[in-house]
Length: 136
Image 1 (cartoon, one colour):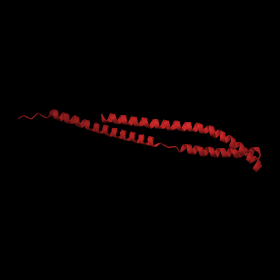
Image 2 (image 1 turned 120 degrees about the horizontal axis):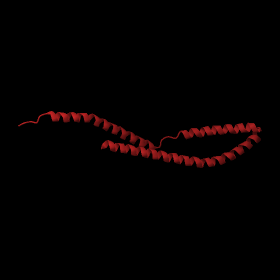
Image 3 (image 1 turned 180 degrees about the vertical axis):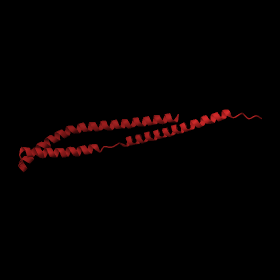
Image 4 (image 1 turned 90 degrees about the horizontal axis):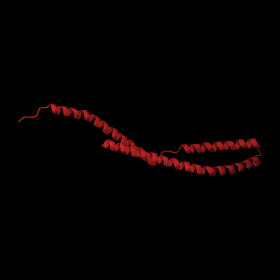
């Protein structure tokens, strides 16, 4: 019965891990969507201000100004993608994964032990049937 319970524990731990993963992913998506709205507005005004500042202060033409702003946008985009890629497992996900691993390892150990003992028990049963009863 213990291997069955260990399998249940492993399944429950995996469920907890996936639920935590889904909650974390959903929260990240919601935050990213809300932030995107504000970023679009801020970038629009920043680009307008930057455009006029570059044109007036540096005396650039339209093409040079567009290239400078485009390069700046690419650098910012690369930085944001790098930050987004650094997100790792939460504490809950790590703990649930560890519980699942331990339960599966214990289940395998118990099943292996049972598989090793089963032939031995059969052999003992055969030997017991073959030995004559003691006569007094």
